[in-house]
Length: 611
Image 1 (cartoon, helix red, strand yellow):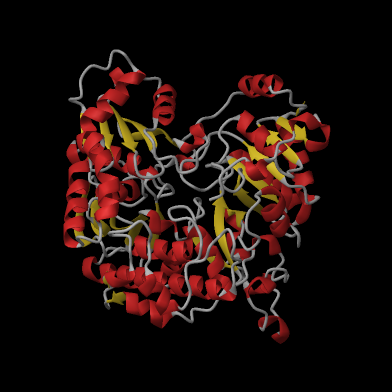
Image 2 (cartoon, one colour; image 1 turned 90 degrees about the vertical axis):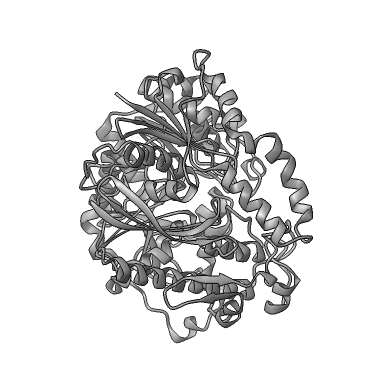
């Protein structure tokens, strides 16, 4: 049996994955172990986990592959500094010591790090390097349910490429077209993330969540920054940006164009201006992605589309591509960002380099993206005892029945079951659950549990067989990467007076039968749940439907703002005791907040650095 260890690291979201004969065995992000959000460091703990889960020592692994090529990246940095000299000198001076010390000699650096896992690991001859965007494309195509697909990847920047088009057939994948740095849709979106006062590389989804509160009134001004061609290719006017040479994303020219300085998140509230900016850049992003999708459908005549790269996490844009019916089928890699590069690099080595036969799985090969650690009943109970938790053990039927009863009574529940998810979304393994019919659930979860901005929407998990009745999409969306709208018969239309409300004033209006998961524009980021991928979660939602007639529950990731998603029972207990969650369900154990010793209460608001 041949094994491949895939690694992504040193930019953001370090991760590791393990393949055995091409099968995805395990994958996880380093942040879940170190408890540092988007941890970019060498993924020591993630590697330890994937090896342990695969029952392998490092010296028994056949090949190790890194998700990008450091020499190409270094070439891009040098050429950028030369092209923009002398403006880039400060960032050049900051970047060079690390490159010369570590990144340029990455093979040697990796070898020395890898030796710490296994004293019998003796040679670096089995370390390989993939291309950044090929890693993304491979992560999207090879696990997909398609024999043939066109693959669109878009992110900030890899080595040189920022957007690529590839064609995948059977076990082959070839990049056909590229857009190069500094022209980047990911960096354009990040520039507006920075400008509206959110954190670059983690706050982009906030910008997307803020967009429906605004109107795209700055669309024409943004088109002064970006020249969009009919085929979706684009060029950014560098005189408005600072990311190629400086330590910020935008510059004074950018501020002058829009009439304000970047928002200071410490001292400035979000205003209608920021909502309108968010709406405008979201509309431009959708326009580019739709034009790219249309042009590649026309160019290649292939009916299936795969998406990866950070921009593929823009589920609103994905939903618009789906709605336009450009492709017959769309599949999006759930770990679309850099973490998924570890998986893509390993798959590229197995299929493209080694020419192994590919068997197509009708669903996909991601196993629901439940690829992380799991805990036995004995391990959970041992951990709960050691931390002094008060718990009740139930049989399966009673556990499902009780949990659904608590949900129907508007309790906020921490749900910790099976294997942890790979990628940024909680999918019913490490989730916080609530009743979507509740008027207060969205606000309460945001402010009292997640400690985050009140405007942020929540996702509905819905039984796959009931999807069509509640939402205007009718395709599988197991990874919460497609946005649809609430069906018209479930909507509560706004009055003329209500339509005149601005921004955050729209938040408290009841807009549907499931207000906690209905965004202000009637949209929802849908997760479909089927019995095969996650039986326990499916059974819980089914029981909730039996009690309430509603086959939908609120699903948000089990963490507070700034914290990575919980990984262990202890992480879950700490988050439970540091928030206003009512109950915690781990395996077959239920913990009631009222029955816990008050000495375990934590101040979670200040525990983590806000994202």
